[in-house]
Image (cartoon, rainbow, N blue to C red; front, side, top):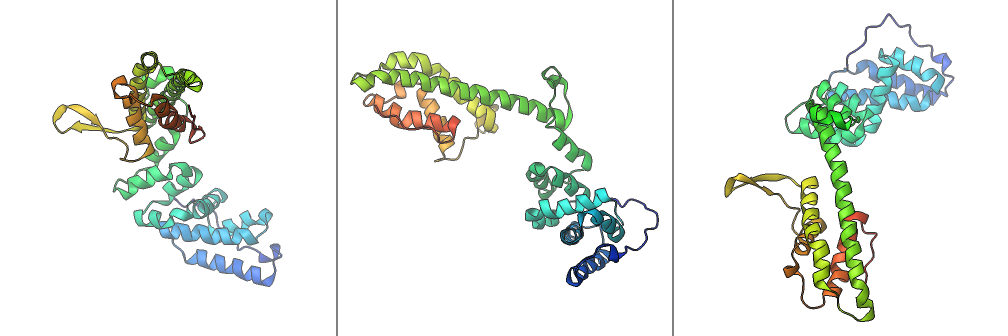
Length: 292
């Protein structure tokens, strides 16, 4: 964070604070600590913000700005940024210090903490970002008209295109899962009267849709790599074995091929195994099991 050149600032008149002696002593200690600190390292930036935050809890709001400018020689905007860094990023302090993230970058992250994991990962991976690059990451969430997406460049353009695809992909996935569930529930209705599920009719309705839905799921959330046995082809990096999303992948694979469906107890399989997992994928566990 670059220090802003300022005219000579007069010493602060502590009589303006009207504080109790013990609180006044703490504020004066904060000013003394600020005078000792440098402003170049990540650790010093945190310590500077922490001292300002301590004082801010004790000094009336109407006079804190004046005191802070006098004690820190920073503008009020910089003071506010330093306090945000100390408070908003405190849980990540050790990692930020270890990665030597500059104060200017931390100021941006304190104002947009949702982007901290991505930016910090770059620094920890040995790829420090510039302020411009961080701005592009943060600014990439601004809406870009659909007609402009094919020509939107840079990190911001790449992010905008990815977000547009993600938004549409998730919507189509959810709609298709809901359609598959509706078809299954309709097919299970005769089972309530002790009749069998018409497997062929159900398969005609959901088999191809299940295949498409599996491709949509993999396309939206999974990574790919070159096939080690065929460098001209790629293969999907699946969800971890045993995870619920891996189960969802495998379920859609099975639903996409009627020959893989159980021959016996089809109604039980559909109601006890299939429907709950499909519901979980779009409702987060709100779906209830249906019994034939």
